[in-house]
Amino acid sequence: MLSHNDSRPGEGGHDADWRDNVMPYIKKMHTIEYWRQDDKLTNIEALTGDDATFPILYIRFFELSDDHDYTMRSVFKQASETAKAMNLPWGLYYNAFLQGDIGRHVATVNFYKNWTDLDSPQKWKETYEGLYGENTWDNFIDTVNGTFKNQWDEIWVKNEWRLISKQILTNKMYAKDLSNMKGFFVFNSDSSIAEETIRNFIL
Image 1: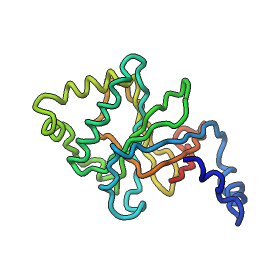
Image 2: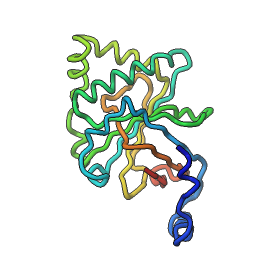
Image 3: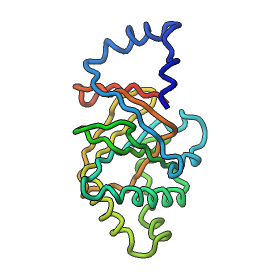
Image 4: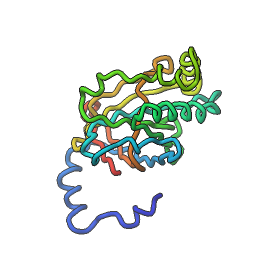
C-alpha cells in the first residue's frame, strides 16, 4: 500500500513546482492520512467515464461509538447492498492508522457529475425496504445512530482542491446520501482558513 512513496516524483521539476506554486498558499499542514478501500463492499463499477466525469466528491466521515462499534460491519454491508441495488457508485474506506482524538475512523464518498445531481432524490429508504422488508428503515437508522457518535460531511471539487462546504452532523442527523470514492487515496489537510482549506489529494 505504501510502496508508491518509494518512487514518488521528485525530479523533473515536481518538487520545485510544489515549493513555488503550492506551499506559498498554505498556512499550516498538520495531518497526513492514508485510507484503504473495502473492495468487497465498494461499488465503483457504477462509475462511467474518466475521473473528470464526476468532479464533485461528497465525503462523509464517521467516528465510531465506543459501545456499539461491533455493528459497523453489518451497517455498511446493508448500505452496500442497497447502493448496488440502485446501481449507485458507492464505496467504503478505513483510516489506515490510529487517529487518537481526531476520530476520523471511516469515510464514504459519492461522485457527482454536477451540483444539480445533489438535488436529485435518491430512493435509499424505498430500496432498503425492498431488500430487507417493510418498516425496516427506521431500525437501520437507529443502528447507525448507535454505531457512530459523530458524522460530518465535506464536499470537494476536483481540480480546485478547495474545501467548499463542511457540515457537522450529530449521530441523530444521519443523511440519506451515503458516499463513494474510487481507489485508495491520501490527503494532507492544512487548515486555519476554514472555507479555503487546500487539499492535496492523490488517487
